[in-house]
Image 1 (cartoon, rainbow, N blue to C red):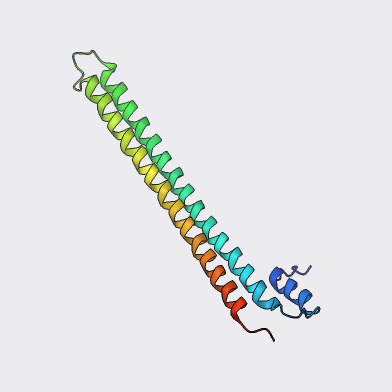
Image 2 (image 1 turned 90 degrees about the vertical axis):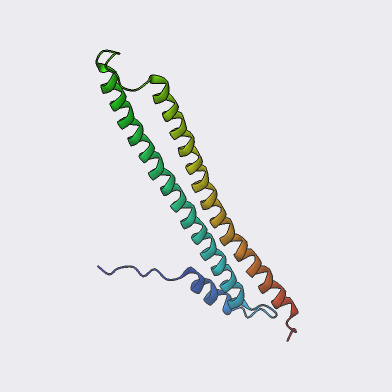
Amino acid sequence: MTKPEHSDPFSQFSAMFQQYKLPGFDVQAILDARRKDVEALAAANRVAFGGIEALRDKQIEILRRALSDFQGIAQQFAGSPKEASANPTEVVQKALHQALADMQDIAQKTQQAQTEAYAIVTKRIEEAAKELKSSLEQPKQ
């Protein structure tokens, strides 16, 4: 059994449109521009997915640390209250400070991923505008 060939869909469209030979249209340039658009969107999606993975990893880290902290607190207070070495108020304050730091870290990771994805798409939009302007400025044949 032979493996099916997966050809580039842009090549298929190019071949299909080349047969019509439309005057004033550079089919290859149009298809190249659309290919660049798709590549930019794919790159933006990879960045966004990387951001999602980073958030997942941070949330797992937070959960593990919280479970470990709770286990430590439970063990510490399992004996008599007089034997407990930490003040419950201090434990709660520490947990709140850590939660705020974790929230700030998550917000920074989210913002970084969004900024990177936005930059990729913005760059491609600027390139597309330059390409369009250049194609409009070329003398018609």
